[in-house]
Image 1 (cartoon, rainbow, N blue to C red):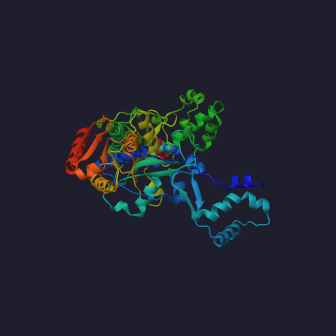
Image 2: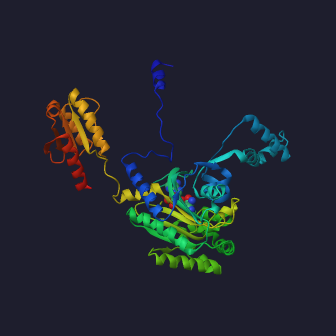
Image 3: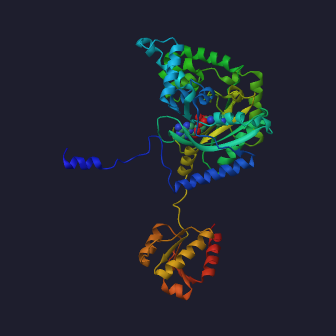
Length: 474
Ligand code: HAM
């Protein structure tokens, strides 16, 4: 290898964030903080308390709640064996193959059962980065005996979720959700309506633009299976006109055919039977009451019979909210009722309803409509020169920060011209000029950068002046 080539190789490798993940940088993070702060405030006014859930859980929890045939579980989860003790794994491997009656010398038989063997060997130690948090909230409800608390229990959460999807605008592999769940108590339609009212109130506080709420009822264990069969039969009749994705779903989950965005399938889907015409009496009454309750709260909705949602745990009420500026990934919130999920996870029969907001999309939409924060400016840039001035500058910075002002204190001496240029670049409102004269006179010069005006203040007056001008501008 030539010397040049060796040098080239030595250059340290540059790292990049993994596809589908990204860094959130200032000043954008200020908007994230504002959104999250608003969620804390609004949700508290509805009596919700924050729950902080683990980022990873046993794979089985998600598989059982969300459903094996869903896209999330079948393709998108980040799962891995948590403990990998070679000897332990080897022992399990031996037990499983013996139990399945597989002779390891029989390669063909081993290959044919490889998936099942792997599943059984790793089943208990498999963990998954959470793709959503409803399952975790239900797990926590059971684990902490929350059914003994006054019902319903109202919880909310925020944080990262993980799904191995094809990244695009508004779709990431690590994304953030703000969600809420109401667990226990009754399934009174007033609860469904209040949960929806809360998320709409939150969007309203944030001045999110172009908000559109779609609602539907997808029935219950009694009426949905009959409708699904009816739908399957109807889709089979038009199978040849559908694309491969929809064709595949006829068997796995025909409801998902209704989700299709494929242009060519739209006229065909429009002719399919609608669930609203096949709800049982109880579900029909519940749906009618939810609509009435929404109207009582002044919540504007649109009925969308094709809104079925992609996770298996839903029943009855489902809803989705879209907002402007998001392109094809325009669902900013999805939710619905999931009575029975807690029971499915080994808990007592429990009603449940909730939603999750895609925070990344919410932020995108706010930015598109000009609600993003401006560059985070400083209140005061301290331009100092001389050793005595530095001591004063340090003290001034401390006092100003204590009073809540954002202060930039250069760590080394700068000529005043350069310092003022720097203050300008940082978008500072004021430059506090501290040189030998100022320090010995006890009169500090404050320059307003917008108009270049200057005034002298004593230390005490300065704080007063800044406080007053902050009050005027806010
Ligand atoms: P979901 O519809 O799967 O529902 O997700 C809710 C929201 O999360 C979506 O509307 C979207 O805004 C956002 N989202 C989902 N995947 C991505 C992604 N890859 N990139 C960016 N944003 C994404 C649930 O997760 C349910 N747990 C909601 C729920 C709570 N239902 C009842 N309680």
